[in-house]
Amino acid sequence: MQGKRALVTVHRDEVAPRFDLCTEVLVLDFDEGRVTRRKDLVLAHPSADELCDLILRMDVETVVCGGIEEEYYHYLRWKRLEVLDSVAGEIEVVVGALSQGHLRQGDIFYPEAGQK
Image 1 (spheres, helix red, strand yellow):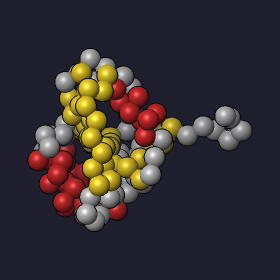
Image 2: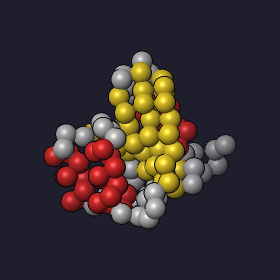
Image 3: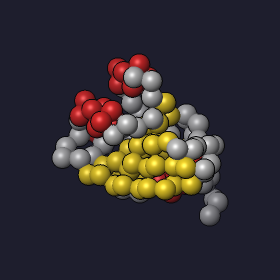
Image 4: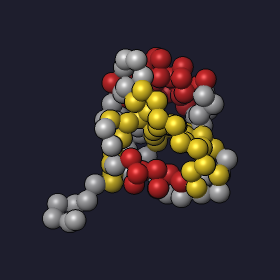
């Protein structure tokens, strides 16, 4: 990912399971496969409409989230944003995959049972 801005929905140290209930986001700027700027934002309350407005105001190009309602998914796609939904896992692992250009819709980053 080069010269791009991404937003990841956050719940504790993982990707938030639901876009519409998210109260924290991570905004990342990338250049040449590395994070050049990282900003954590805490939202006043969960609101998918307000989150979409924030995404557009911040010139985000890629949104990473868990579950997202079809209405918001299509709205963001209509605005020409890349939406990688159904992503699950620890934030740092997801950010690493995103910065290297390996993150795909539906990726799950949890170790299998019995692995450490």
